[in-house]
Length: 312
Image (tube, rainbow, N blue to C red; front, top):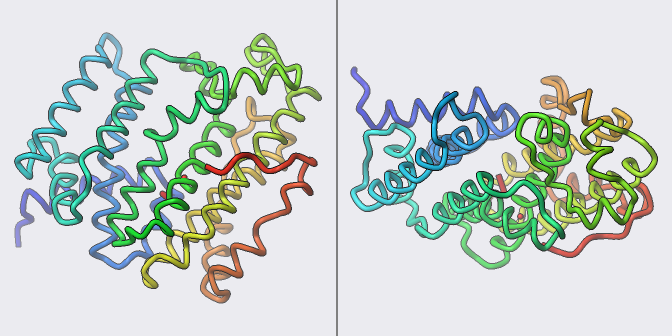
């Protein structure tokens, strides 16, 4: 039996998720089938513009490409379909789950910021970017899962933020060398005596280690805030979200195990570690598992919790 255009569009989004987001994809396998399909559509929607701004083809105009994608997104949300596979699946998903249109627009606003802004003075400045780049993804996930209670939405915002910060700290070297971006707040760098010149040289010195301990503690504070929302999710959706949270937060552990060298060593979790985490989550109630997996913030580098502030 031939696949419909919509089925082909969803299959395309699934392939993007499997290729680019291996940790996310592993976690999505444990959603109910109808939810899993929607999560793939969401991933496809966000991955496409991310590639436009991060890996534009030589000679292309990423600003124009991103604006074209924005217009195509608005049209897809209005008509319920698109010639672009990722938007065809996304428009169907958005209709079925009554997704507020301001969420995808906020995400595209953040992608546009990456084309014009390469540094952030304060953490509050950075959060003007991370709201759109990550926290609204958590809020969109809540709509897909049918969890629209404020008790779920706040933690979803925080899980998105925690995962984005984890990406930032893992990719410090790559973001600088390939894109000229610094997501470490400049005031934090100044506080610990770590200069942009040191970053450009890939220095892993005492100031950098102190800075990274502080930023890792900040990310962990948001993971702990996000944990409060897991029990608010539908029962058949808690495992994949808790699993994604556990596996992504482990990247912070890997950064520490690598001696904080994010310039020459990439922090990642192995397939065996993913499987082991799945077994532990299946054997242990999610809330107790997350609590036992969250180290004391003052026990890892002596840094205090950050301000509260992000899901997949």
